[in-house]
Image 1 (tube, rainbow, N blue to C red):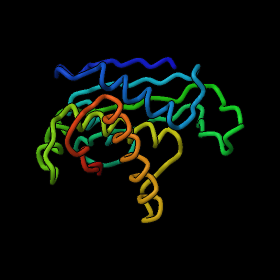
Image 2: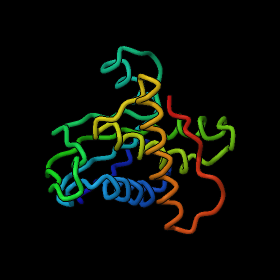
Image 3: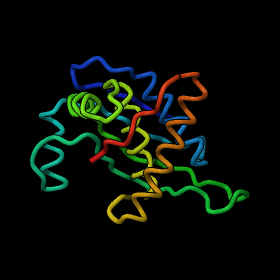
Image 4: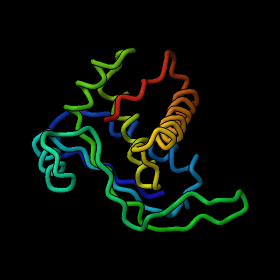
Length: 165
């Protein structure tokens, strides 16, 4: 799996954890090991510009996903996953920090960025949360992936609750 993490935000973030959780999520979703993903970490100003340009919404947001080849997880266990360019995930640590602090369980900016990375991966794979049933499926899968990743690393305590807007 080729995953590039590029921090343009000026904020120190745990890039290795972002890389690791993205790789774990893609593995859990059975995405071809030669597929490519880019994760870009930007400041609030850059994220606000992207949010306005692509969503026509003011203010910075937490995560945005820009799919390329519209790859999907294989439908069957014996099906070969397609290879390609997944796309870009853009993260904003300033928004992540605020969301982490305001979450019911309270968690760090880096924990929120890990959650947002998984959320972005799922969006690249075609998952959405506009409708209640879609939201239940996506957020359930997101929690299972984050919990699995945390469990493999021996991280204790509750996983971050979904705070994605």
